[in-house]
Amino acid sequence: MNPAEYEAMYQVEDTLWWYQGMRLIATALIGDRLVPGTRILDAGCGTGGNLAWFEGATSRNRQPGTGFGVDFSDDAMGFCQARNLARIARASVCDLPFTSGSFDGVMSFDVIYHLGVSSDQAALREAARVLRPGGWALIRVPAFDALRSEHDEAVHTRERYLLASLKDRVSSAGLVVERATYANTLLFPFAAISRVLRRSSHEPAETASDVRPASAAAQAVGSFALRLEALALNWASLPFGLSAIVLASRPRELPR
Image 1 (tube, one colour):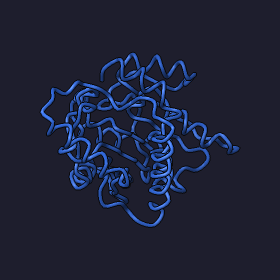
Image 2 (cartoon, one colour):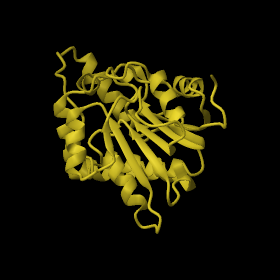
Image 3 (cartoon, helix red, strand yellow):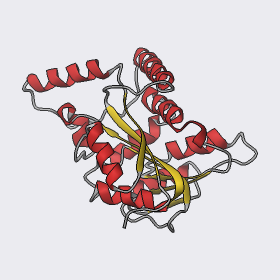
Image 4 (tube, one colour):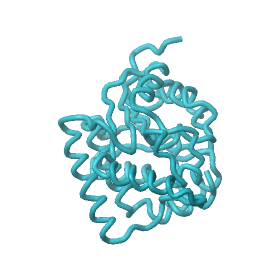
């Protein structure tokens, strides 16, 4: 990913509606699996915002959770250190520096789709390997290749996934899919129309990221939409959206 993307992410990751809302959605999907004492790995932790969120979400318990993070980027490591995150390591998600069965949970948010990840299947197999039997993995990727935009160029997107293909790859890694859903559904029509119109204008597209501060109106609308989706996910999965998410668990024995 472009080094400038890490700087942009670090500046807005704690406050931008998208990050805040997607954490609410993650919480709704993880549910009561986020218990005191949980050991969790953020595989592809970026600037550490989600790892800091996890630490904060469990810090109110007498047995707070323990979070670990890995990322291959030196820039990402620098920003994690700026957040005073101690349990981080520079490593590939395809070759995790942990023994098998080390974690209760693995989260990997918008990572395995990058060109910099040599194989999404290898990354998913590694996530399965480091989970204890019965442990959970929450995997999120961008959805629908037809929605490629300048942002995808800026962050080096290899592909955007259909939910069915993400489920298949998670299953092929030896994990059991428990929940599969799209997210960022309510804003999907606006994003889709905007991207189609930009392409149909035939103007040269400048490679530009969507990671930037939002106006007050956009912040309010985006936050409201994702809060509604997080509530809805307590009862049902969403049929389409800008993101595809799978919650899976490790069986007692992984396939050889």
